[in-house]
Image: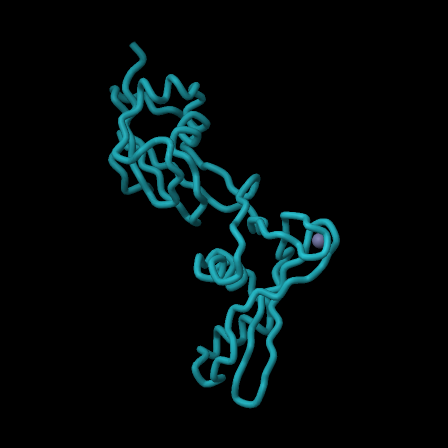
Length: 186
Ligand SMILES: [Zn+2]
């Protein structure tokens, strides 16, 4: 059962697959790479470990190694994490790929096109206007609130701007939870 009061509708943004990586291929100049199913490479050098997440160009298949850990003492790893790297644990792949530090260090941005969905309650409840909606993010998918709301409510964007009261800017992409109020149509 939901813990929300009945007049607050919960919306959830979820990842449906791993996003692509926007990064320029040094061979073919393509701008898009994928981690596919997700594969790590671990290399031991004495007591130091390198861990990479592998990405390949979607056009020419050239492989790029994204450094997750560089020359890191073996003993500083949590054994469960280390095991996750050796078995290509999908949750670990997702958490490393979505870590903004990795993107910054390896100079890529995430392309979320087609890699997420919005879950809304199936029926619009029979409640008094105005209606409150609370949006939570299961994964940090950057969305423009005005587009998300238009999609979720089946409204045009001018109508969203007219009928929505929101405590954050509607046109600026966000990936953290927010709430808004839908006013009745005139
Ligand atoms: Zn390429």
